[in-house]
Length: 547
Ligand code: F6P
Image (cartoon, rainbow, N blue to C red; front, side):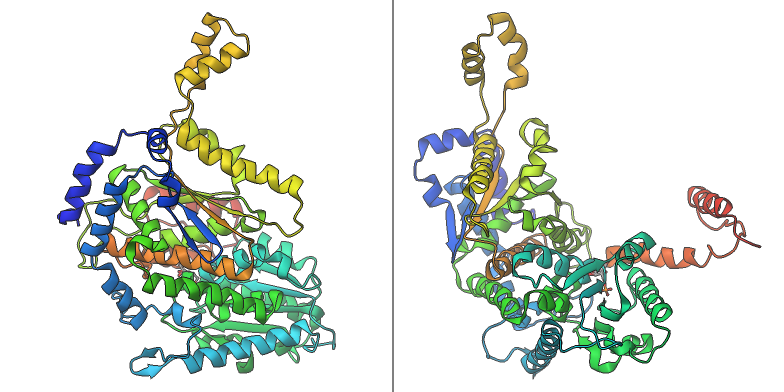
């Protein structure tokens, strides 16, 4: 990749622009906002507060063309097996397409199967929402517990939290992911088995954390109810492994299908969202799909220079590979998006945290960034100090709604004033002259000003990209998620990596299984390194296991 012509031009260009100040760029170009912002339906994407000029964009777009991004977009949507290490297509977009045009995989149209499963999900959700679904003692369901982890947890939980105002408030949805017993125990303690429905969400139905939690839930149910007779009214599964779900004891009619062409972290559009459909209803869920499909159309049909995911990806490459920034911060100014950074962590870091290229060669350039984030307002009082005055360059994505549900402007103006102020502060900073004037106005003398000056200066020139949308409704949320999905895809293509496998999580899982079998007795363990042996033996000794 570093040998590409556009890459080399970008390297040269970087040396000439790296010290330019955004505050000067804005001062010299009053059209900068108009030039460097894009809209998609009600989403405004302002990328003008980035360390770029026309030439930067031109060269970044040349890079996108040189890696044949348009051809790759076509390959993706055509269902070619671009997840080559697992020999799989990547077709989560088929789950949200609003078109009836066949989507073929190995010559077979997959849409009828998708629609059939979605209809089943809708029917079950509707029965629960309308109190027709009855538990073992003929009571309706008041609590739904989704047991899953990774993509079988983060997506459903994030969407549930994001769309809370659209949920039925008398059905409580709980998410259990951690194999730490505290998670499931803390959840079960308030629940009544007669009115609880468990959804075991696992694409593979082999993930240890989920399986252990699922067994505990089953035991809890059986202990309380004393019989398996009506268990089918309280347990469902979403999985690609129907055999294992049946072996677990789930009634076939309660098993909702997933497919191997949907990656776990891209599965929010599938039956894995059963808990969400129960919470928000199928019409709202459909709107989530509509919003994502709109982005799919935009991504396929829009020229690269106006293509939002492409621009997002190119800016990410610019900072990651030229400015050598290692991180990106996701900062939603919408309380309901509080799980969005965690969701994007998996989406981005499990996809692009790779160091071997598509030809099996070690890469010699930086790939996926470390993504972190938090609700913007909370982060202001936690880690923004580092963003403003630390030694690291952390490009930030800021997301904020124009309207909030209750339209309470006292709150909303206070919130939004921070959005605008933070992006301005990060861009402009505060120079020596400005600080001096401010301190003088406060009545400080020359010596006091001199002593304080270095601490009060903000270098500025810190990039932010801002998304402003009307309100966080299902459609907009669907669009936002899909924008990031396609951004990740474009970056993976440029870095020449496979964004759709996740071999990096295998080793830990395998070792945990081996070690698990060594924890049941008090025999000393000797077959690991001395640190691992030491930790395991300390644990076993303290537990005082019987011989
Ligand atoms: O931890 C890796 C992973 O495989 C993720 O990619 C996936 O979303 C998660 O585990 C859960 O997997 P499953 O849905 O098969 O239980």
